[in-house]
Image 1 (cartoon, rainbow, N blue to C red):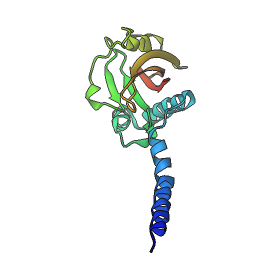
Image 2 (tube, rainbow, N blue to C red):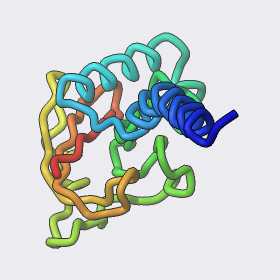
Image 3 (cartoon, rainbow, N blue to C red):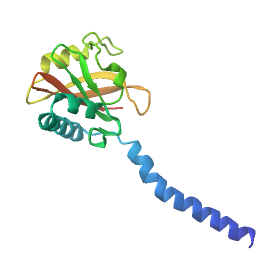
Length: 158
C-alpha cells in the first residue's frame, strides 16, 4: 500500500466519522425556539394532569427524560409561594425559595413569573446562564399557571 492509499483511507474514515458525529453534535447544541418552549410547557402540564404532581415533578427533574429536556430547553416548576418543586437542569434547586433570585441586572424575575403567569401563559424576560455555553445570556421564559403551580420553559436569545 502506498502513502497516497493510506491518506485516502484516513481521509475517508475521517469524513465518515464526521457524517455520523456531526448530526449528534448538532442535536446537543440545540437552542430551542419560542414554539418549542410553549409546546414543552403544554406537554408538561398534560403529563402533570395524567400522572399527578409527585410523578410529574420527578420526571421533569430527570435529565434522562428526553421529552422534557432538549438542548437548552428544560421544564421548571414553582409552587404558588415561589419554591422550586422541579428543575430540569439542577435538582439541587428543588426546595429553594426562588422569590429572591435576581438576574445580573438585579431583576427579580421569579416574582414577575409568579405575578404574571396565567392559564393562557406569558413571556418573562431576564438574563441567566445558558447551560450549554456557561455564559450569561438574555432569556425569555414561557410560564403558565396551572393547578396552583407555575410551569415554565425558557429560551436563550444570544
